[in-house]
Amino acid sequence: MSSQFFFALFCFIAIPTVTGRVLKIQRIFPLVFLQLLFGFVIHMSGLDVWLQAHNLDLLNGPLGYSLNGLGWLGVSLLIAMVASEAAPTGTKKQRWRFVPISVVGFAFTCAIGSAVGLLLVDMYPALKGTRASDTVFALAVGISLSVTALPVLAAILRETGLVGSVLGNLATNCAILEDVWLWLGMAAILSLAASSGHRFAIIAWLLVYLLAMFLLVRLLLNRWLKLMKEVSANVCWYRSH
Image (cartoon, rainbow, N blue to C red; front, side, top):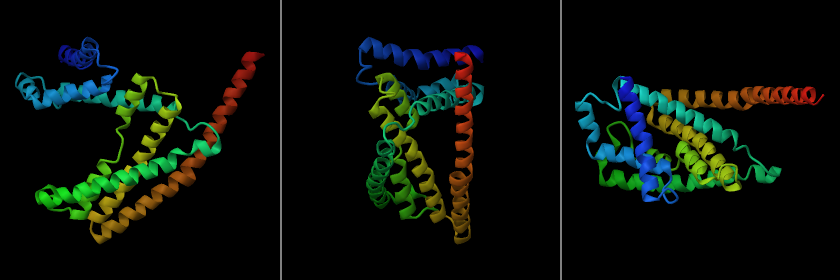
């Protein structure tokens, strides 16, 4: 399996990279876009089915699970690196300007997406399934279309050299905050789709979670950051003396 793993890994890295360099389109289409396109072509062409027939399953089994685990590790490290460089900067007013931008952008896109969802469920009623209502389906479509793919955004910013810039910082912080709206929206959708008893339980647990994060976890993180700053200052003082 090791040879298959390294061969698949090489193909996913080398083929999009070589394609972008040979065709000289990396400035127009970042590498992450070419990698997504490569995966889309594999699926639409039926190559993944052909590979499965030849004992090369990219989604399941030892090979698929290894590639999936490595992919999640890479995504986690990429997000952590970009987020560590995306702390709000500038004056106090400028530092939090991404909040209203994120709220307005998410709400506007969600409204458009929900309208599209209502249109889809009107044209194709089977799409909503047997358990969801028209409203729940429309909201789910709207929320799904409103969230930025943070790993893709992080890769694009790195490849275009915008990491650390004002625009890159603003885009990253908006994308991070949109994940918060995503989970809050998912909680709202689940509460709407659940029975009345489960609905109140979901809302109650959500309130408990928010209170714990804003009151307890925020306090602990602030204390930890102050401690780290003091340790860093002491280390710098000892080195200078």
